Length: 303
Image (cartoon, rainbow, N blue to C red; front, side, top):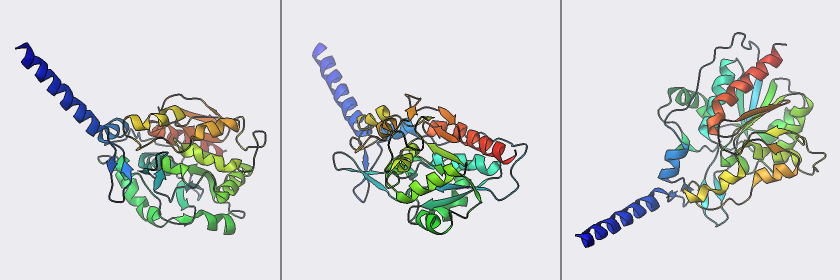
């Protein structure tokens, strides 16, 4: 009897181990890249967002807009050489846009060269009607965005239409944007013209572009405090199969070295406003982040 119980227990443990292994194994795609495992998706994503409608008493009636800078790169090569299929996180893009548009502020979309916006479709909240509606409204802009390079070269200096720059997260914000010279010029231009800068989750990685050729003393955001996706949480990605390997580089540490303080230790709903830089820690912060951004920009416009 005891032998049967022990055998049964051993079989149970083996089955549980196999099930856990399968659940934490990143899912390979047709192109050989990987999306997060079933377990990590169940932890990190949801079929609905926490979007909360806000009725703004005095919405903007003019033509002022926010310029959203997105990634046009899909795959991140991890430290072990495996490719992580990433892009911009849909909730971190679309939920803040909902709040901005409710406040009467439209959002233009650009990528570095005008190639299509890459989106983490595996993170799309499939049962969220508000997010779905906004995605359909912006789908053509995501497929054929403007070119940041062209904007900087031909329109930026004389433009008076914009009140802010928005960089959404997703690990894709770490691809191509932190070392982009046009983004460097855009961030300095927006700062010099007293605009708001908005960045959520991994979006602050792109703020490193403002630090190209800068020292800690000369960096645009030196002395600022931000909310951002923690390096420590990124390091845990392979443990549950969110990423297929360790991160190729760590951005929070680079921001710290340029004089930026990250105030949160968890990937939670922390948001922070320091002067005209508004930041959020993770997708969980998207609702609060969008509201904070919309209120701050409206307050400035309604002065």
